[in-house]
Length: 393
Image 1: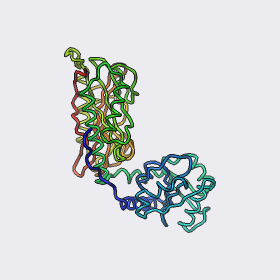
Image 2: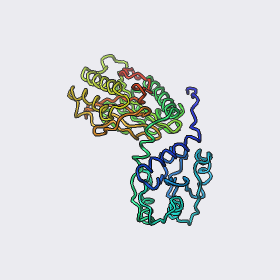
Image 3: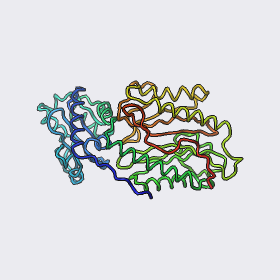
Image 4: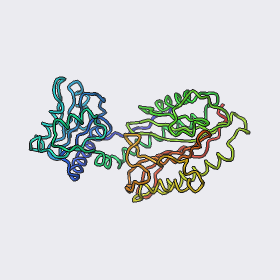
């Protein structure tokens, strides 16, 4: 195991700043309050990774008055220990097992806004708030129109600060090392599932708290973008898609590299058709990455990659977006896809991962995590993007 570099710690004051930015953004959007349930939005605003229970845990951020973290009594100790609570940026309100937690939310809102529950107008609810809680909010506060807080919180979360970018860089470096170890080890004769298990073990050994996915797609399975590693035995003379990732310090890794295994037989190297396909993909990924800069529309990055693949006749074989944001979630804003005209901004972090898939034959994908810097792309992954031709024995 590599010696883990020191990780940055996000100070409690930063969570207070995030709450105030979220409050201001909600006010500008015309909301009376933000209601944030368990999930990455809550973790972003408070540093609290709460257990996803049927018992309500919710951060209530009215546009006037204090922010309050509501938690069931049996969860008050970890809630009290979160950075936002330790820093005094949220008040705590516990509820007993027989209490009506949604009624507590309504009371807090009425008190903070200095109006009756029946006059509450618009509430922004986090995208991960369970439907059972949303339905009870509708019953308890029928005057309110409940809308997604995604446009408010997603915009804030998409701009990473220096500490977040460093955590993403550390996660990327750890994933780079795992790819190198897997590609240089034995692959031929092993099942995809066995290699995937090794990937997960190595990600954890490299400091990840979670090894969330390990796509190992060999031979014809490489043409399935989200292939579930199976009992298929890897054979000489075929490609392998390695798409792996998880979270380190709460922030995600996600890398895809291509390996071709020969079994030690030079005659079982990649054929000309695959080399052409891979060359097109390599060019598309490189040019899409190079196009990253502040002000360019997200869809323009997608169009850059897609135009190269289209021109070589593989357009219909590239069936997914070019990239997705990454941070506390593996997939978050911004999305690099046709129709998304939002401009990139410094601090946005996302994947650049075009792919070409020939069903029943083989496929390929290349993926780096990229940050939009003030003058262009900052590529966090350092593993070579070239086709890794290995013996695999």
